[in-house]
Amino acid sequence: MSDQSFNVHCRHGYIALLSILIVSAMAAATVLILFVTGITSTMNSADSFNGRLAHALSEACMERALQSLTSCDILCHDGTQLECDDGTAATCSMAAPYEIVFGSNKCQIVAFVNTAANIWRIRTTGVVGTVKKYIEVEASKTPLPALLAAGVTAWRECLAFPALPALCVAP
Image (cartoon, rainbow, N blue to C red; front, side, top):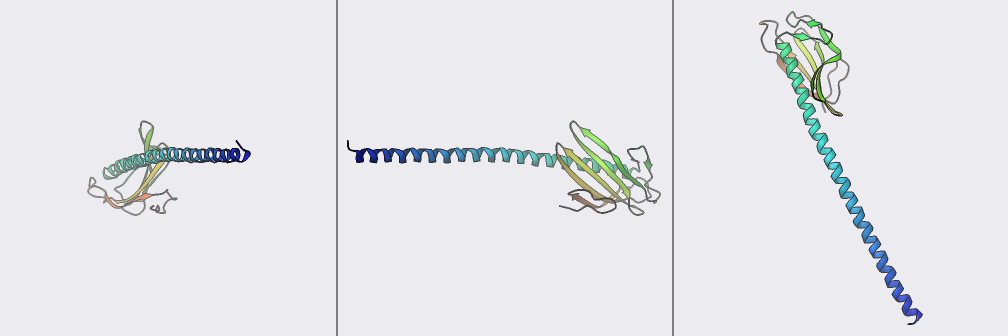
């Protein structure tokens, strides 16, 4: 066998080896991308589920707060009882919020503020893991009769709560 024939065979072997390495690297990259995409998709799905659960918890606390307003039984975290039928401005802005705990998840009534004679602003949060959802409601409560249901005039989902009395910003 001549040197020239040997070089041609070596060159073909070298090209085949490089082709196999390139195809293997592309296949490994594809598998890695699919694996990372699967993990990301699973994490997004879990965050989406936790977000829906946190929203439901925030709504549960809001319903509890509206029931409290309807029955004029607004109890602050420090034991203060707010009067909702006398038309005077009252605030129950909670430094340590009223909480309802569901296992490791919770919802909180963060603020109960009488912004005008018969208009109340209520803020609640729902927390599931690291996901937190915010809801702010404005409700009217007519002083008499005492057990007349509170009427919701605005219901907003918020990105976060600004300092009171500012309204929250909807997403």
